[in-house]
Image (cartoon, rainbow, N blue to C red; front, side, top):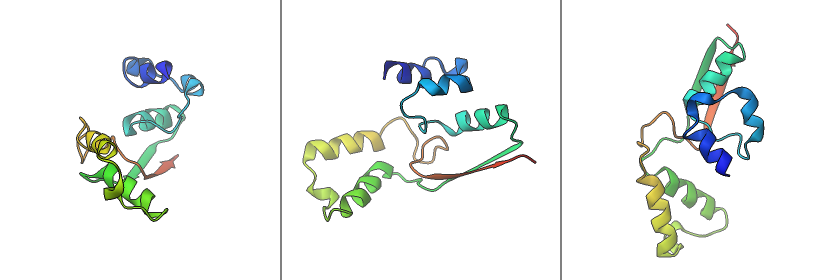
Length: 110
């Protein structure tokens, strides 16, 4: 976990494709990271469509997930709701291109 945090924050400029093998969660990358990796692999165009852009990104995600087991978000204890709010109010802008729970990615060679 320490390596993951360092790789994704402090050592951002030192990233290379081979370092990915040491990560636990290989899908946690910014769009900028994905674009750099795709270009390094020879792709000419990267199209990333963010499918989950919202001011309440995490609240909506948890509400949807909880609904699959017939629970409502409002039924979560206050402390749990506060944690979700912290994520939604974090330094990520709701319209940032770097935060998405769901995206489609198209890599083109030409």
